[in-house]
Image 1 (tube, rainbow, N blue to C red):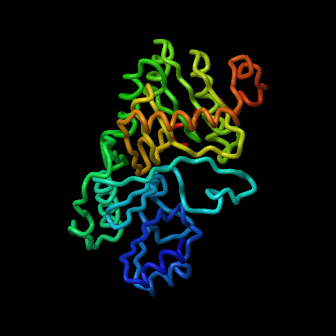
Image 2 (cartoon, helix red, strand yellow; image 1 turned 45 degrees about the horizontal axis):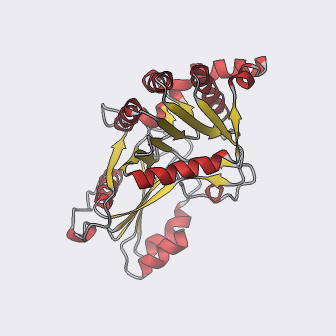
Amino acid sequence: MLNALTAKAKQGVKVRLLYDELGSRRLSKRMLRPLIEAGGEAAAFFPSRFRIFNLRMNYRNHRKLVIVDGRIGYVGGFNVGNEYLGLDPKFGYWRDTHLRIRGSAVHSLQTRFILDWNQATRKHDITYEHELFPEDAPAGEVGMQVVASGPNSRLEHIKQGYIKMIASAKHSIYLQSPYFIPDASMLDALRIAVLSGVHVHVMIPDKPDHMFIYWATLYNIGELLETGANVYLYKNGFIHAKTLVVDQEIASVGTANTDVRSFKLNFEVNAFIYDANVSLRLVEAFKQDIAVSELLTIEKYRSRPLRIKFKESISRLLSPIL
């Protein structure tokens, strides 16, 4: 990735790389030097004077954005790292969902990047130049909103969008998330949907990448199972997708996990999509994942060992900070 960015910088392309310092703690200045020498720029989000300890470690830039020429944008679950290519033996195959966007919605992604870049560099050297926002003909007819959230906003925009979608459901809800630690409002919305006759399907990983988060996820999943939701444990590696589809008409794909950290602490961005065809494709992807997943029944959940229940209870107490 760095080699590709450096090559474009040498060709005269304006390259700007913004990275979350805590998540990129193995990224050294030496690794970035070729890019900088080629004319590219790199900046850390909320950097710390102390490499190991960061007083703002809770406020992560969890956004994953790429914008090319103001005409093509990418957003979704994929980070940049070997594990996300399936090269980490601990996780194996990495199942994620990402969007490639063309059209005016790319301008919203571009704006989001400019705001983050100007904050990180404190130079405010990117202005809203015409070349960054080309006025092309519409690329399609898909309605889309790009929604950002973070601790700099009093309102939890992405979570509220999720709850609005869930509350509007009449037939089905499909939710994929590597972590499931919602607050009471979202958990209640899902339970109400199940009790109202909506078919709620939730998919989580069968293996943990963070133990406390995994046990807290299982505790909350139990709350849904008790009301009759369908829960699937993804077994073909690790599922990292963050998708929500309602009635096969409205969908959301982005960076926010279904947990308190993503809704309140992290800087996130999601695309809300108002299109039946895209929603159907996401549902079909979910159904393909079911083929390599295990249905978690309420009987199996209730029969879990006492030591697992203890771990879940402890993890539940830590949920607000996980």
